Structures are given as structure tokens and as C-alpha cells.
Amino acid sequence: MTRLTHLDDAGAARMVDVGGKPVTQRRAVARGRIAMSAAALAAIRDGAVAKGDVLATARIAGIMAAKRTADLIPLCHPLPLGSVTIDLVLDDSGLTATATATTDAKTGVEMEALTAASVALLTVYDMAKAIDKAMVIHDIRLIEKTGGKSGDWRADVA
Image (cartoon, rainbow, N blue to C red; front, top):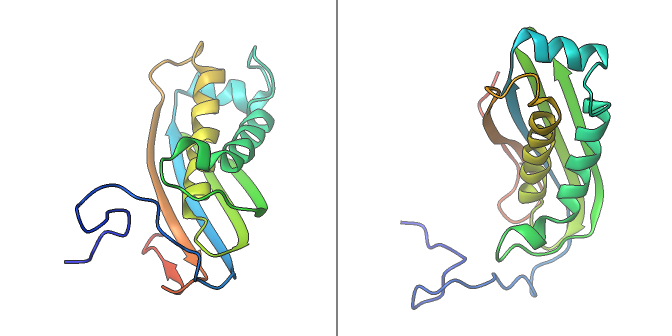
């Protein structure tokens, strides 16, 4: 069994010591979806949501969330983010959010990408919930990561 790095020998939670690790370029991509009604989708697509520009607001929210990840996730290291991008794509049944985060640091940026995608989707829900309270956020996951001791990884996704 793999040893969990966030637990000490007694099983207590701890922040992982990255002090001796080298700084490397790191990148992570996370993706998630929100399914919604045709009415909510049309309102977002047409810019007719009463709260304002849903896509622009979701992008900003995702970027801001990535910058606050260490404040939200216990034991997560604060990272100097090089960039965060949020791509939002509408289709026939909803919206896909893809967040990409980069850093030059001693630890990975996966949590920042996952947080960015999650908060972007939550923002879409918040802004359009007056139209469709039954929206479903799903399939939030890491798509790929590069850099660091464990090397590169990519999910088997289409």
C-alpha cells in the first residue's frame, strides 16, 4: 500500500515538507461539466441572465479561486501561480469548464486547477439558478499534470 504523505507515522494529519525538493515547472488541467435545461443554456448563450455575463463572471471566479486554494484546502501549500486559464464551452446539454494552472514551484498545481474548474461551475449555477435549480455539476476531475518528481500523467479521456 502506498504511504499517504499527509499523515505522519502516528497517523496524524500534517503538511508535506517540500523544503528539499527542487523548483520545477508544473502544469495541471482539470475539467468538469454542468448539465442544464434548454432555457438556462439559451439564456447563458444569449447573454440574457439577469445577474449578468455568466461566462465572464465564471472565468474570473475560477481564476480567483485558484489563487485562494491554499486558504480553502487544508494542508495545501500556497503556490506562486504563473497563469490560470478557464475555457468554457457550451454544447447542447450544458457547459464544460476546463481550467489550466501553471507554476514554477516545489509541489504540484493540481488542486488549483481542480478548485478553479469547480468554482467556475458553481458560479454558473449561482448565476443561472433562477432559471434552472435542477442543474447538475458532475465529472470534475484532473485531466493531466506535468512536472515534478512523479513526472507527467494524463487521464484516459476522450
